[in-house]
Image (cartoon, rainbow, N blue to C red; front, side, top):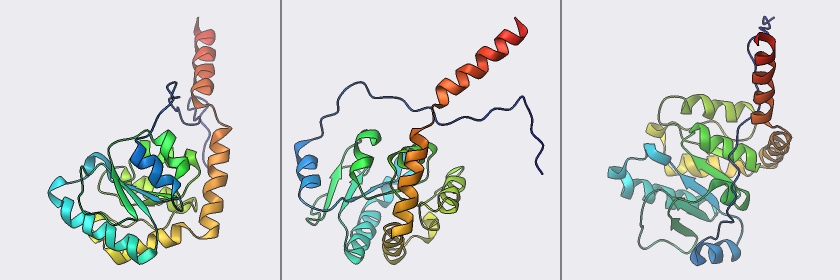
Length: 202
């Protein structure tokens, strides 16, 4: 049985609240409105631009195989995309994630937290460092498929993972996790711990 240490405290996430109402580009707004919720795909700062063409081709093939629509972000301008896929620049996750059906990403701590909060499934393709831990944590929580390591990524594997992420249990678990996170107030809880420590010693 783990030993409890009264000097160690763990609270919920610290989320930055957006105080400015975000207005999406018209092209994105129209894309969201004209079909089912798309899958958001972005590999963050670890994305290798030298592999852009190969990666985009893989993504498009996977999206076609699983019959979904997709938003590709963080890969710059992409020409000749099929109707079911759109490419965008960076966008506030807090605005977009509640409007998509799943988030396919690299497993960075910030992106993972935003997906958890939005209550949508995660398809995580870890590249390095703590991304592997978050990928496996997502799977353990039942809010996403088993992680696919970047070196093992294929269109077929990605298509299967996206389909799995849309299964009823995964969608339900993701919504429940989002609802639970919404009840937390990590910053406030932490501040109370700090105050209590100060009162104890001063």
